[in-house]
Amino acid sequence: MENIGKKEIRVNPRDLPWIKCSKGNYIWETSFVMKRLSPLLSPTGKEERIPMEVILCKTCGKVPAFMAKEIPDLPTEIISDCE
Image (tube, rainbow, N blue to C red; front, side, top):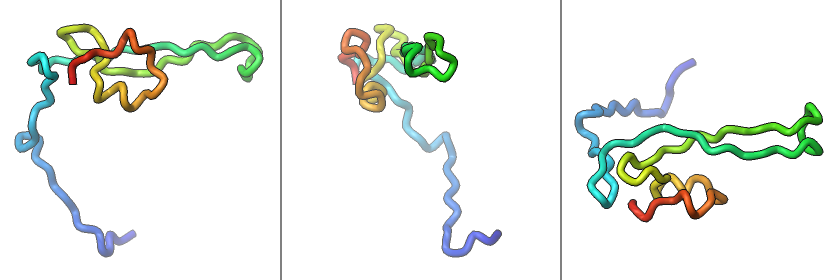
């Protein structure tokens, strides 16, 4: 299949800016939050736990605001005030 009309864009990661939170942190961790699926809605008829991947600020241990915007119903107590 030809790539007609599409321009190939090459990005060098060295040219991209680092993401830093408002508290000066550059280090992030991958973690999970869990959602509960009721047995009434579960295809197995049993309670299910559904993991959802999030990024945590290494400084405060909470989900940064830019990530929290991607998960609209995230509990406010785990959202950081850093950007």
